[in-house]
Image (cartoon, rainbow, N blue to C red; front, top):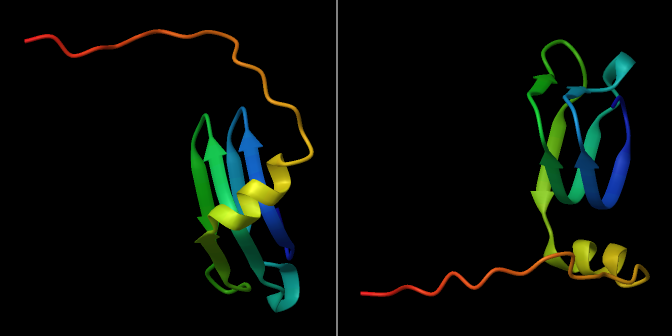
Length: 79
């Protein structure tokens, strides 16, 4: 990703590279980023990279998507 502003949730099934924007553009993410691989942030000599956890932005992004429970497991603690 280069030089963007995003509000919500970003799900990545592979690797993620964040390049602060070319020419000083910045990356601003309000919400959350979930990555199933390696994350590389290249902000040196480029624009800044800012990721702010924001539960309201996540709720807003998911409110229009019907969610289904695919599986359930009871992990009760027994002594």
